[in-house]
Image (cartoon, rainbow, N blue to C red):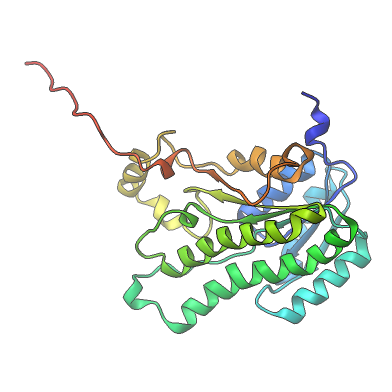
Length: 266
């Protein structure tokens, strides 16, 4: 198989939420296979060091301010991106947040923060960037979901609702835009250590509990997502649209012990 299927040279990838976390890993993976980058964050200066790292790879990098909860900010960012680079080939809708609380403690403002950021923001960023993609007849949109797109977890009601919505949104947008050459897919990581959940990984008992449920026998490492994001951004996935790709070490299969452990002999 030719490496040309995965070569993104000459293409421009926008990755939202790249001041930290998985957004930087997504952007780095795309840059390593040739893509130039548009990076976004609510505060542009938080992108400086990462933009310098990507520039050192020989990539053109444009840093833009974006608040996905503000429609005017989305429109302004989209216009600035088009003016700076012309055609945007790839969008990774990564910007997101979480509020981890028991359902009885979730406030109105908690719910709005998570849903407005993760779901409403993803839709309107996709809409703004897809206008150019549809007009030109080509694009790859990758919405970042989660294993909570398909599984429910206590303490994550707003987050799970937003990520489940991302899965449904992905299918709807794929039906809308795929006839115009724009594929839309959802990349759904499992349990990865990020800044949002770092404190949980500091509890050895919880990590042991988690690993027991992952057939791959370990939590995800950020670079475990590299191949998936490159695949969905590239020509290799040209006939894949409306899908949710779980990269979760197998936790979504619902691992259950179906055999009794043999007793040790005296």
